[in-house]
Image (tube, rainbow, N blue to C red; front, top):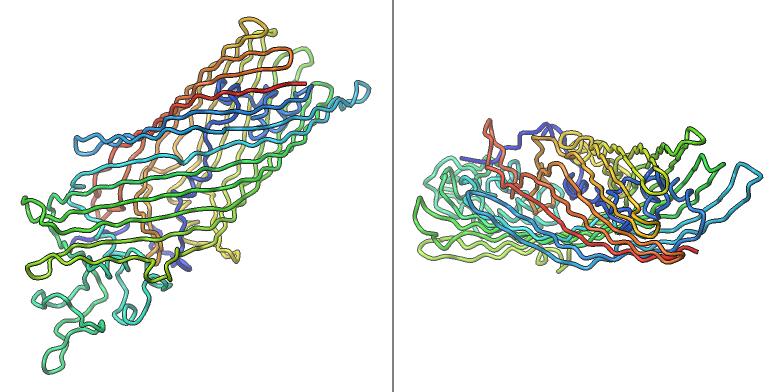
Length: 551
């Protein structure tokens, strides 16, 4: 029978417990958007060595040391997010518009004097929405005849009749939720010794059917197949998803100015995570090239990740030559140490022919778990971050900035709440993820002392290896099987700004674009490529307004 077979070395590892988190969720949470004040965004975020903006508190903490006066600022924005997917000659678009509160911060600058080498000691606090998850997506097609039921069957291999009998499949350590949904929804069958045994293969108590003499009519090999068999029929598939929430960052900073040439800063960051994801996957079954038979199934998955984390950032800025406007910046960020809770529930409705009629079966995890979500607490450590930056000014009119940043996502670590390592997820990080290189450039030109024009660009390489897949351990509680291997990300920015004697206002526009390959489920097989990916294009247009006062 045609079945999904995961082509990955992960199969060699025996996972501990029903691990929930995947590297795709982790990368989504660990990555950050280009966000902050309108001035910072307008210059493409390339201000690590230039400093003097509250948003540098999260990239190079030494940038707060540039301040020589107090500052208070707040930023607001409006964003338009669009997800385009192309599959089988069809194009699907879904958009989402949203108002944003992007940042609010304050800097207290204290002048020590001109006698000692220490000139200023500054303190700062900043709130910033560093990640937005708000997006909707849809796609549909025949998926080359592949079915999600093949994955359900493959993840069920090894489950014995005794394991099904008398157990709660949604609360068992050795049965995954996809297997439970497929079994309870009659989408998968055990492999048997004869194809003459009528369905069902077990009696009402889950026992194998015997003949009049007490002999088994078939032998269960603990090997499962999809009810669709080998047929490469043009079944209709439809996928929809809705994501919301974000990551909020709260930074507390102290920084120092030595002789107006060397600046040192330290930031403690606190993070709040709120990620919600709903997916719907629909399959209509057909026979050959005929019209839909009225049978099929719908699987809905409800997921939420919430929790908090912290990290430390250390940064420095140096003017190597006293009379030169050149500045060099260096910053190091520790991993963000997250304590997270993953909550999930799932609902499957199957409509299948039994005899000459369609029988509907509903499988809802709520019915097995006292009308509640299944929750799992775990820990996640994101990669270290290394940042190098350059800043150069020409008189009082032109400022130029450039940055390079590196994060190796393959070093992402996962742990259970008791501190034991999640072997499957941690090894999946090494097999599926890689280092990300980010380049940022930006410029600001003051037409007159009170009015400035800005432009910027930044590029981030992909965090995913070319052959990355969303591999799930057989006892996984994940039921959202979709994943996207996102490619490089580009941000294009423009901005304008006004500076008065105390009040200032900045306006920026940001356009982000990122392409990727989308799969509703893992379809890799023995030596086969699997289903064709849907071509994904994520775009986001955002306008940001910052209002502030220096005093």
